[in-house]
Image (tube, rainbow, N blue to C red):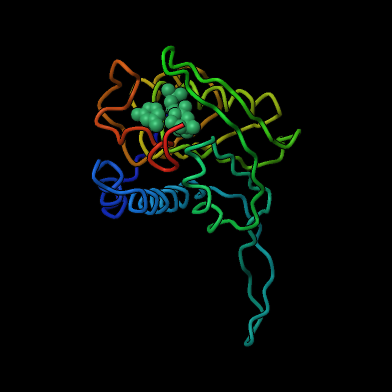
Length: 207
Ligand SMILES: O=P(O)(O)OC[C@H]1O[C@H](OP(=O)(O)OP(=O)(O)O)[C@H](O)[C@@H]1O
Ligand SMILES: O=c1cc[nH]c(=O)[nH]1
Ligand SMILES: [Mg+2]
């Protein structure tokens, strides 16, 4: 799995805003949402579709009908910051929720919610989480999805650490990754450097 890094100048500009410690909550949320929309658009590029007949006011032709089996899975909390943007692109999608909170000392994610359809066999699944740091949260989320029958998962992560990408690759999980940046490294608190700080706190306040 090689990550798909989106280098569009608008992505880079919104990335600057979310990185900037002086961006206020409204600016951060807005830029994060725009990043969510641009990255989700790329992540949705292989959506399944049929070719169907269409009658225009002038003649008969054919058109594209995108399958309605899309499932978005935001990883709470921070994943909620990009959910609305993804839903604007696919309003027909279903939504499943996973709640994960990293333990601040061990950096291991603790799962507190899995509200998902039982059978994911036929779903096109997109996990939404702005941050891939150690990879623990995304890997635990994808393991849960695979245990329910997921065949392939696309992850939308705004920022990634190389350590998290390596862990995801080593996991052997059937995951593709779309991101705006692969940053330098993790620091001793397992935060991404240069990063943007704590995405959940910047979106919703400290917990
Ligand atoms: O790759 P990892 O090392 O697992 O770190 C990434 C996770 O950390 C953040 O969530 P956090 O645990 O801070 O929860 P929050 O979104 O509620 O703030 C982020 O949104 C990811 O889910
Ligand atoms: O840098 C990081 C790492 C994990 N979670 C965040 O929100 N930020
Ligand atoms: Mg957080």
